[in-house]
Image (tube, rainbow, N blue to C red; front, side):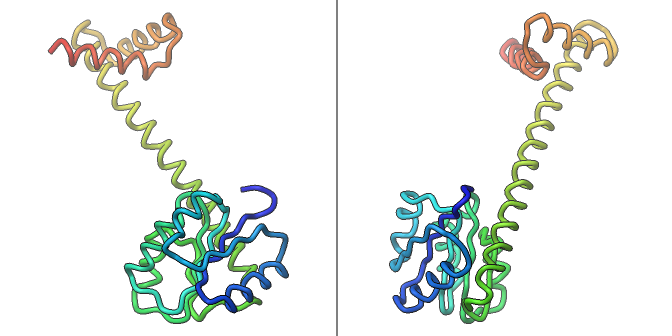
Length: 194
């Protein structure tokens, strides 16, 4: 996210949109765009690439909530949704759809800045968690391939696990490649031969 936050405000009512924009201007220095027609949300977000999307709705349905959240790109930016009323389970559905902040009882100017800060902080926390999870999954997959390659070497050469690992590591060093790459090549070649 850049120094000056880029914010898209999604609000069909012109007066409410002006109130939100004014509240944002009082809260800080933001680059603000207003979208009054939610059907163009995905296209405009793609064009503008904002840091945050603020959505103000009276009483969203579950389908509308998911559509708005998906169009807002919740995995790419913070999404804060202000609603006047909410049915049971809607806040949980909003969080599951990727909304960073789901605020019932509408948008009030005095709450805007703290909620915006919380939405951004929560988005960044989940972004870090997604990155860590992806890295952990990748490392686990690499470990599985290395273990398979070690097993193949153990069987083919009649050596123990430590010796098989040493053979793999030496091959990787000799070829100037990562251990996983050498192990993957071995597993792939064995698969082709069997």
